[in-house]
Image (cartoon, rainbow, N blue to C red; front, side, top):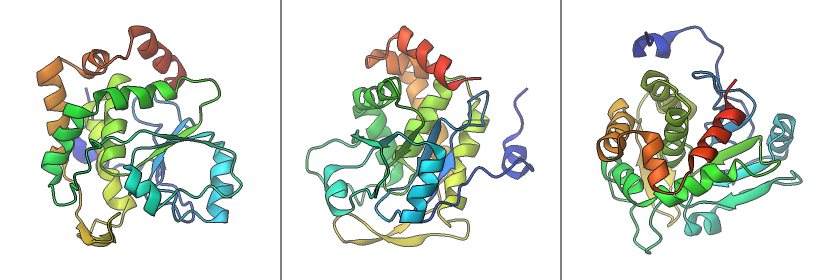
Length: 240
């Protein structure tokens, strides 16, 4: 039987958040279910990564960085890799139609991504299967929403329980210092906005939407091009 969510959020397992200078909300995605540690990491952007932080990423062996941001974000806040030898790959999850969605609530952004970004999500997961791609780091702006969606879908594909997916998702509140309420941030257009703590229903509603429309996460990704062979390859790579 799956552990209760409140137990998952309050147990005494070793912390998964990583202290990497200049990298917000960084953690190893491994741990939930049988997902292997040391292969896939998630975080916020690398735009503020320090040279010390780069050395920490080098110790982790990161070879590939998957960036889920829009082109305007990349232009304003480019990733810093210093002398780190990595391949940067760009997979924007929001529609590239020139519309500023900064005022849209997350309750609209999440369904929008699920409804429009299926092929991009598949392309990002497929990138993990390329030779020498792992370990990899996936990020968006703060490593919470777009990164949280890709992470949740991958974890579900690998058979991780909804309770553990939700616990990983909510860990961003701690990683971004949101446990005590919203904090200010500057978006790609130079507008000061508030970042609010994420809620359980954002990710559970997203998974429910996928399942109501496609049956399950594997079928959703399959409908957008991910083959059964690629699913098997991801499981062989990432599961113990």
